[in-house]
Length: 93
Image (cartoon, rainbow, N blue to C red):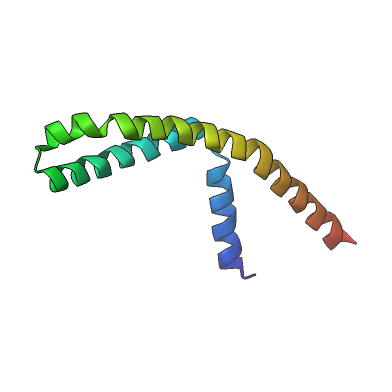
């Protein structure tokens, strides 16, 4: 793997280790904006009306994302860290 792609993967891995709450908030804000736009375009509602409708479903999705990411971090990233340590040990041999 080249140094460039290795750097990209490390950046992504470090970002995914980040705080689940911050990621959930960013995800939810983006989801609300997208939902407002879609509801407005599909129904002809104003952005204010579409925003009222679009707040409920993305908010529930944001909570679900927080729970999912928290569980994923606990299970998957532990496995990744263990594998990384094994790679270092193997390279030293």
